[in-house]
Length: 465
Image (cartoon, rainbow, N blue to C red; front, top):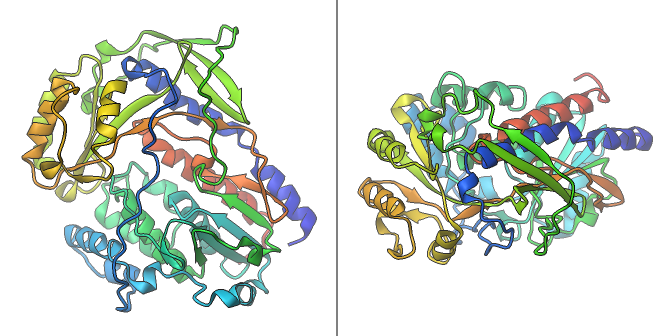
């Protein structure tokens, strides 16, 4: 691509201010609904890094994952088989495109030499994969795409995805970004409006589909990116792993008044379906924003906004009513948020988000290094809210329920991103711009909308397919 055209496109794609309102929707929810649990500090023991699955022997059995899954008509069988395949390191699925590292540049050039646009995407999470897929679906012959991933079992072998959480992604938001076979799978397992597929299975489907579409993958904990010199666009889809986020320990509260937000009269209508107690919402909050290294960081009532949380996942719907009754009747401070998922009713599962006090977070962070079955988890009985212990007791008797590692919602918005790679400005997408609130769609819907925005701008400079 002409250098001037690529530079103009990059400048246009780096404009992300229009996403600030989407980010702020999570800030407001945290203030109005979760405000009792704002811990007032960003300095928490970290549990944010996604764990790498234990190394397993590589399965050499040839696998055409998309074709095999699409051929299954029963939704439960389809989802079970996809889950099984996604956790088995089949070489055809997890091996990257550059087995001979000495031929890295030559292999790349052989695929990219006749392409109009060369794109490098850092990060093989859902947003990076969605962008790679969208570019190939739009015009595979004109675009070369390489996706770089550093989370590996070993150089050349990608680690399986691990975040088995049901999603809240409308089918309409992915329809133009993925190939028809994936849309058919989403139709079969999701409800009328949403794809429903847990995030690890979505990532696995996108990975397999991208490979089929001709996307190249480069998996290495220390990648040699100089081999891709000459690309036209570079995207950061690492969610902040590439350029670390800066949450200052010493927060100087600005003297500006900030923005006071009164709880809208209609706010929270329908939240009872999630066990949210409208009477426990905070009627008025103040949000100030401090600037740190190109980031906007919100303060809630003059304190750093940070909500410690944890999740119970893979909750069978047979246990939903009992759990709803307990959480709804014991939610005087909105500790609990129970969500019923968006899969077809016969295969659906629920997710329970639990707000933690700072003390509870510190108690649990060392006890839960990895997600594990709740029934066999060794959990402390001291230092936790009695309601939390009761939920653990109730759900611990339900087969299949998983307890996840504690995490925190520490919102940020990057309105300035100055990182460069290979002499080019990097374009942030997804969580590299902002992180969504897990109870407000987790940002995925907005991030996928931004991928569509990026796709439309790129299509304007490409020849017709």
